[in-house]
Image: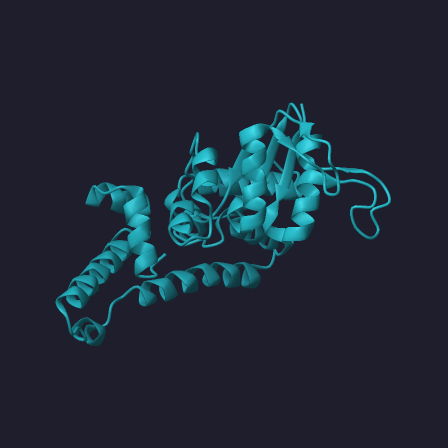
Amino acid sequence: MPFIILRCGAMPKDLLENELFGHEVGAFTGATRVKRGLFEVADRGTLFLDEIGEIDPGNQVKILDVIETGKFRRLGGNEEILVDVRIITATNRNLKDEVEEGRFRQDLFFRLNVLYVFIPPLRERKKDIPSLIEHFIKAKSGDPGKAGSYFSVEEMETITGGQWLGNSRELLNFVEKTLVFNSNKIKRDEFLKEIETVNEKIGTEIEPSAEASEKVETFEAFIDNAEKVFLTQMLKKYKYNKTKIINELKISRAKFYRLLNKYKLN
């Protein structure tokens, strides 16, 4: 059955509504034919809404209504259309925090949060990096070669030790440009140096200064400062491996990420 993908973050809210629900003839200037929306196209199949956290409140209400009733109207239409659609969503935002900040509807969050799958950032999944490199090499060159045949042991240590703030997309870009300059050692060393530079920069940024540690005026400020210093030390100790830190501190992942957001450490 259909598997339809919509990247919500790339669309203005008016265009998003039209994509989801479609329109009738005459619904707006230039609407000269009926357009089926993606809810209708995905009937009896799956609609994957990527970057769901970017959707505006108005369209959040409309999506919630379709989930609740299984019905919707095209733009400019009066007839209710019945659909049976499985919805999968993805986001790089913390939707619980978005709900608390009033940017995401709580009722929609609970409706979507039936089966929750958390995928840690790539820097917390070091063991996945060689397999991803091999997959990208095959995808870009057609060569099903092993990562070890393209990168030395020392190079792989640098790559797996990277922060990869852009996750798999950043790793893909790295592999692609390395393949282009595969025979140019100067360029390859330059790309690897970029990874080391990012690591050094992040290590400097999370190091708390003694001066900052002393500037506290209230007990609450003292507690906040101590908490921030402790978290930065843990991040440095475990090289941003948040799963290890969570296990060490024995706190929930949600609470840990709230602390990171509070002190702008993520």
